[in-house]
Image (cartoon, rainbow, N blue to C red; front, side, top):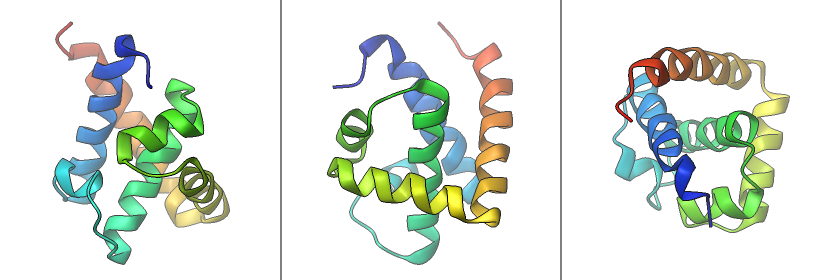
Length: 103
């Protein structure tokens, strides 16, 4: 299970991805499989892996998915220039938001 100390960071990444991809957080963690929603979810998973250093299993628990789905998501973002750019946008926005996030 993800470290409870990182819950605010996990939530903030979900909120940031939600805002940048214009989709509600509950859809990110839901079962939807549309292309746009899957891309947003993959970026969120990849950013959690890179920034928070969560394990694949921990990230899978956040999204109610198996660790192998998270591995695939991270690999997909790594191999797609478009998704890499979106992930960088999320990281930049996350870092801006975390400074003013209530503790």
